[in-house]
Image (tube, rainbow, N blue to C red; front, side, top):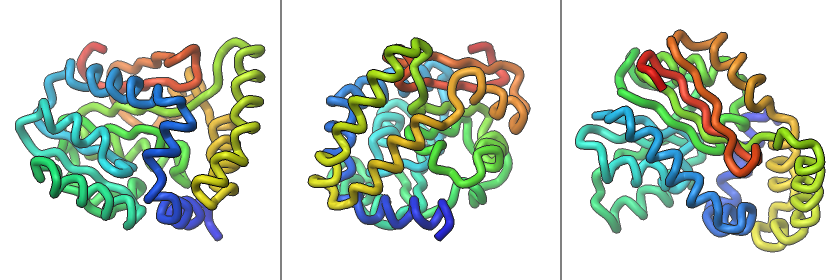
Length: 228
């Protein structure tokens, strides 16, 4: 099974517990991280937005509160989109959710003012291709993703603690292998300057930025032709 198919099936399987598991995994702090992420995006005053790997829609809904134009959320997990649409019907219903693959986005060049992806880029089978597609369809790209703390002691302690939690994740989700994968992928995924190297090589923005979150447990990345 390819990485893409494994990830798609995995997220379909855990979709009904996804938000709860995020709360457990980050001790609720992912909500604050996402809030800060959206605040940074909104500083560019976008009129339209694409949120990729949108999950159940957290980022897309927050963006739509402040964006007058079109906000679209895409995910290649059908069940995630089902949950996002259920939430959409209970709220304003103003976000468009659809199943799509980040490596072949069904949009014309520069359709959106911004494209965002939170905690999803490390699951893309071809990172370079995924970033290239984001840069193609949007005038600016924002990424929030897990990484590795710069301090080695902090890094070792953090990942050691996460691995102790795996049985808890498995009990809640019934997919222990899913969280073993998520932790392993976070531990190995290129972050900070290494991520920026790939970002720069596959997009054509004038300005790039990396912002560590919680000491490097996660990072916010931005690429734009406007000053950041």
